[in-house]
Image 1 (tube, each protein chain N blue to C red):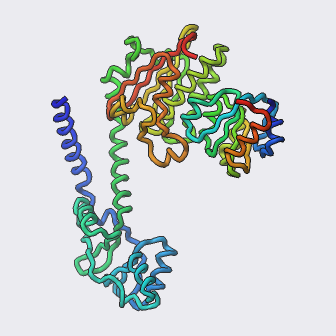
Image 2: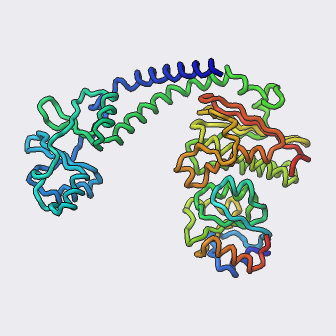
Amino acid sequence: MKLNELVQKCELRVITSLPLETDISDAYIGDLLSDVMGNAPSESIWLTVQSHLNILAVATIVGARAIVLCNGLHFEKATISKADETGVVLLESDETTFNLALKLMKCGLKG
Amino acid sequence: MRKANILAERNVDDLLDKLRGLFADITAEDIMIKSVVTLTKDRTMWQAKELMRICKISGVPITDGDNQLEGIVSIEDIIVALEGNYITDPIEKHMTRDLITFSPETNLEMLIERFNRYRYGRFPVVDSNGKLLGIISKKDIIGAVLDKFRLIYVHDTRRREVLEKSVDWFDKSLISGDYVEKTSADFVYHIDYTDIDTAGVGSAKLKSYLKTLTDDDTLIRRVSIACYEAEVNVVIHSGSEGYIFAWYDEDVARVRVEDYGRGIDNVEQAMKEGFSTASDHVRELGFGAGMGLPNMRRYSDKMVVVSEAGKGVVVEMHFYRNGRK
């Protein structure tokens, strides 16, 4: 499923100016970086409440294509300015992590 | 085992003696805050409360016009005044007059002993005539001790050079036992432990480097995940700089991450999932889940960790092309 389709259907705010043509096949939820590192699938979208710079390294290494910051939180400035360079798409949502996961599922993301 | 314990105890005693020596020359005069906010006793408890709120302090010394110390109003006094409904009374009626004070020569050991015995948050420092010179809170003591430690650390960095030469696990491969040619590594990254924001950048770089060498995505992912964990450990635990070295050939990727810092007391315990010694601050950032070493073991085919308290950590990992998925 294309990322821009998920962005539209789940009403995600796009923070980066990166293309949204990427295919997303899976998702992962986690706020502990090592847990995400150990278990998140690649080609995935990552739902979290962590917004600091280190999440970019985690997403890059684990192969997550986009990070969604849930609960109406906002990314730190440093993270936003670094994101384009790493190619990781940053998105924000006002939903709770659980509700957003439900929405993603309704959109057809299977996991 | 018993012998080891006795040795360890002796080391601790030695260490304590050394520390005592280092801190023996710190006195109340070195630690105290000299620019003290004071009030006179004709002011009201309400004014004391406002002053404490605005200046973010937890107690105000009360002095006469000649800087002679007469009492203290603490947050506790304010709370009692609020409860007793006499917050508008003059300070004179309610200040604590029975004071424990320090002379400027009081040494650190004595200071700590007083803090423990009397349980006050702050102590005034006065000269032999009872004139207020400064004030000391626990925070000021910690600050002074940390300053001293910083000095020790600078002095101690020289130790590293010796350590690197004398401990041979810094020179030899932990897995093969051969001498490691660090200068021949295909990839070298210097880990800056002072900037937690950059934790993981080295491993992300290693990942893009490996991409230029192979299209085996599973291998690249395994290497960079395991390397990330080792890199983060250096930043959040070692208190020392470190290095990532990596070698790649067709059959195997080898990664070696080393630092020269605190070391691991008990490697076996550290290998357990969920065990972590990380501080609350880094936990809030999502680190310190206790999954670092377990993740490294899970994603590598061979892994050896060697460490000793105070002597740094060396992690060596091998990843085979057709190893685990």
